[in-house]
Image (cartoon, rainbow, N blue to C red):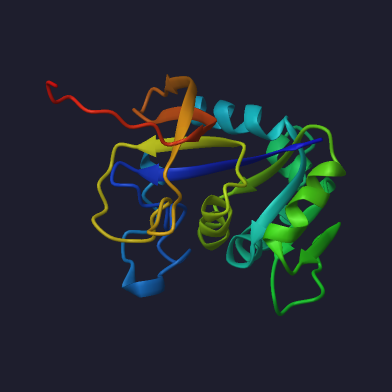
Length: 204
């Protein structure tokens, strides 16, 4: 059975909105889009390539799917690992309204919480989520993510959509690994580790 993994870019203050360009996601008047671009280097590219090698399928929120489907089908170089995986593997889109999608091998899912276990049973490696802020909230609230891969950029954005919103369930995570790129981006991997454990520093 596959695992469900989430890979996303976040700022130091936890914002994941509009990383790729100013026009990507201006919801709520967000004006700082494109904040990953000055920091993307060869180290970041290798990290992303390595993540995509593990994919058997992808799960997207509608907005991220629309962004990806407008770009990646146009990238046809055979040595582009990301494009090769995205264009050839099955893709699932969490959508309550659209029934048809033009990008190769794309299927809608209506009830993410109900359908995720069945989708995971169909594959052996990973069903990967990239970005997809709204979808991520649903997955986090229902404790469906097996592994988080967070690329934290050395920027503070002050506002915007955050990865862990008010509906996040208190829980413990196990740190698996971290690495830092030449431009100062920290890629950290965490896995689910059960319920939140608390204690006290007060002297009895």
